Image 1: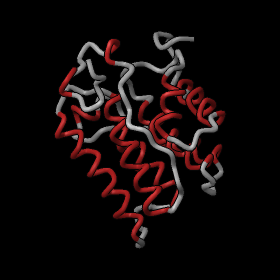
Image 2: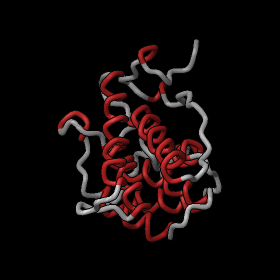
Image 3: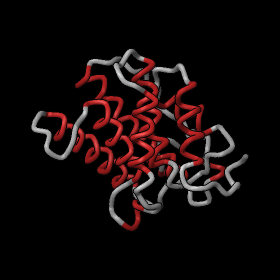
Length: 192
């Protein structure tokens, strides 16, 4: 099935979870690139509300992080499916950022009443990612926003949790599919 196929709620996310479970990479961006190359992932869409955090969870597990990946992905899907599409333009928060924040809260077991530093740490990751997105400006690009969110989430996991994740700076492979691409204004646009 391809990106244009109609899926019932949760089907696309189940395919994403399966693909993340099969990845062996410790680099969240590499997991993202693997999964987004599959035909059921659209250029833009609310699947990023699950996909982006799922890539971080998979890389975390692959790098030795102690997590039940199946249970974590199921919880992330439950949370991500509650977020509406177009959050970036209509709510002032990006679904990619909230997905990565949800993944961090699942890793650390953080909730609304948590009193340790993880509560504020996850908010700092989200706010830093949103600030970087705001600096680039719109219109939305789910891939660009994923690169930013995953970079901030990866830094947090490496610095605060002591799990060594891989990372490489992305060069967008999607710009030709994005009718609203910012071109040279995007920090991930490939050089000419």
